[in-house]
Amino acid sequence: MNASAVSHKPLFNRSKQREQRETFLLLNEASPAFNYLTHLTSLGLVSFGLIVSGSFAIIQSATGHFLPHDLRYLSMDPYQLCGLAQGRVAGFMFHDRVSFGGALIAIGLLYLWLDSNPLKSCEAWAWWTLLITGLAGFGSFLAYLGYGYLDHLHALATLVLLPLYIAALIRYRPSPSHLLSPLSQLTARHARPFHDLTHLTYLSHLTPLRLGRSLLVVTALGLILGGATIMLIGMTCVFVPQDLGYLKLGASDLLAINRRLLPLIAHDRAGFGGAIATCGLLLFSITWFARPSRNLWRTVTLACAIGFATAIVVHPLIGYNDPSHLAPAYLGAILFAAGAIVCHKPMCREETLS
Image: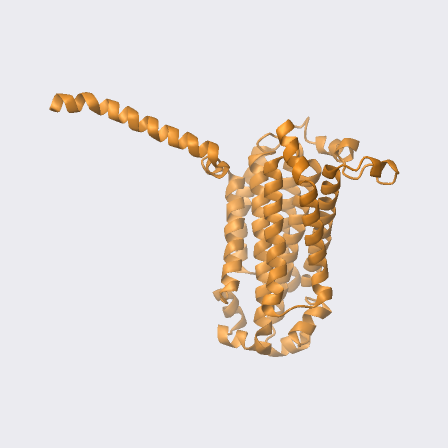
């Protein structure tokens, strides 16, 4: 009995190891996410950090909770804050934070794609995209200088993610001979969605792929402009007239209630604007430079759908339905949806042909 057990034990171990290996290979082939998790990089950690942070911001706001350090800064409890202007002040803060959370998730998803595709292939444009968007995203944290409120949780997250981001920049830095190659790609006729735009030949060569890319580029430019505008407003006057119409309060009224309310709201606005601008920069660069593929289309569509959905849906939930305020978001969502639909088949077909 003992001899038989000993003789069969190695066979059992080899069979179990073979089964585990086959399971691992099956998961690796069936799930790109599983494959990515087994080779997680510093930029991957940044991406997951952004996705988790964005999800936390959405869930916390959706459940009506505030950050403890915000309440300490205001010297108010949640009931007092929710009672201001019949709950509209709290609703306004929640709407900024939900929108900010959606933008963070979108950035995280686009960074995941960037990390697992063009950066892994050492494409110089992807490194420049990482550099520029990182400067915009992390740089927007310095906007607190404009409103005087330092969010300690935001500062901690920045200190944790910044070294990982720098490590990714160092790891993926292209060779000096390829460092400036994106400049030639940026102006190359075959790479430009809008080349010959001023000539009659543009319409005659308007393929679905070019039309779709053009719509996505316009969407990206709108996000950059809109995000920069929101960040600038957050650093200066804080509100647009439609905001004050929703709140039914003026800035002076808020200052009279609590002088720290404006800096806190300004912090949320500036952070949201910086995230939107960063998302626009990512979308612009990826749409302009990246090779069409099914994976790219899925990632861009998912990221932008989450970003637009959170920014739009939160408004009717808090009763903020001003048409002029929502018009840019609706226009951006329509342009994006049209671009994604038009270039879906050609982007997926390009991958198949290649």
